[in-house]
Length: 111
Length: 116
Image (cartoon, rainbow over all chains, first blue to last red; front, side, top):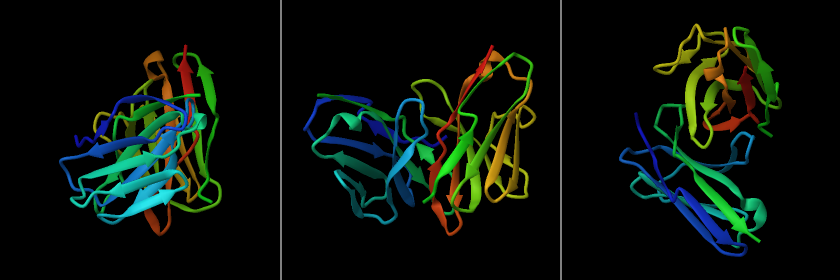
C-alpha cells in the first residue's frame, strides 16, 4: 500500500533546542496533517495543511506543505519537556477521507 | 471543539468472549468514523471506515465477522471484537470527521484491549 517515509525515526535533544522532522512520499497528497501521540493516548491534531506551499504555525510549531505536494516538514522551536511524544505525519488523497500515516518520530527532550 | 471519546479506556477479557468499544463525537456530528488498530511502537493501521446508517467498509485483511462495526447515529459508532483471542490484544483508536470538514480526523483517546 501507499507509504509515507517519515524521518528521523527518533530524536534525542536538549531542552531549548529546535527540532525538525519531515515526511516524503512518491504520491501526491491533497492534505497533510501532523499529529502528536502521548503514551496510551490517541493522536492529537497539531497542524493541518491544505494548500501546496502553505506554511502554518501553531505556537512553537511550524509546518509546511511542500510545493510538489509530496512532502511536508514540522519544526518545533525551543523544545520543552512536554514536547516528548511520538509525532506522526499523515497524508490524504484528493477525494478520500482515509489517512496514510508515517511511521512516526519519537522525540525525547532532556531537561 | 471536535472532541471524540471512547469507552472503555481499557478492558481485560477472557479468550472467547466479545468486547464492545464505543466511540462518540461529543460536540459535533460525525459524517464518518474510522477504526484503527495500533501495535506497540508502530503506526496506526486503518481497520474500517463507517458512515451512519450504512455498512462499514473494511480494509483488506480485516475480518468483518470478527470486528463488527455499528454506526447507529451521527455521534456514535461501536466496534465489537467477537470471540476475542490473545492475538486481538491491541490499542484500538477511533476517529471522526466533522460535517463539512472531511479533511480532518479527530481521534479518540484509545481503548487498550487485553485478552487473557
